[in-house]
Length: 195
Image (cartoon, rainbow, N blue to C red; front, side, top):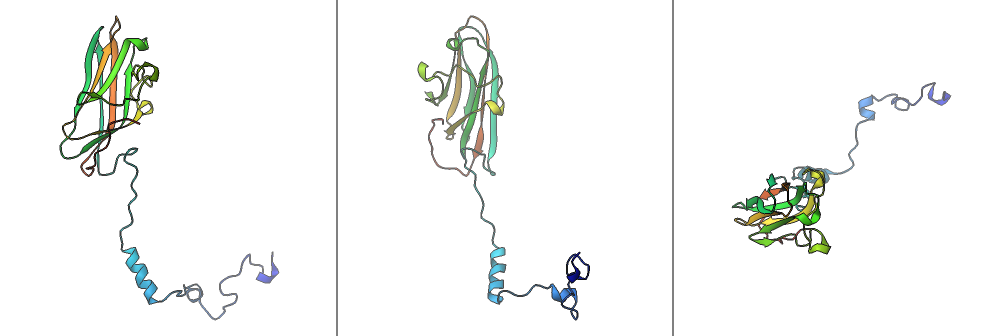
């Protein structure tokens, strides 16, 4: 034990200030003038700067989430529309992910074609050696882990469709999921091509 501290592990407040009380010894001293105090008060009454996360990765706080999906049993030698979705009035629908699923045994026997207003979107999604044919899902289900990132904006009244063709001789279960949001604050027009 340090004998200089009278056997105490540290000096107490009154070691050197025998005539003062603890409140006086430990009170904070003024390190700035009144002008600085007024500036601090004015700054603390200002709303903090909001942080915006990138809208192509995250749903904005003021947007409505969209998560739509469909699963169908598709007969042999048939093309069906698995999903149809119309852009909502008063804002922009922004899809940031999609998932596809089917239980076909061969890549060549199925084809999924996403379209907006009758034109194919995501022209660089799929197999590049087969003209970007989408004939392979990313997993055994439509969970978040199996979503493909994309950027697809629907203006009001735009129509999104997913067409599925089964060229097999047996029925095929096929599903599609779209995940994104509807925002009334976004007024910009952006591309329809996925990323």
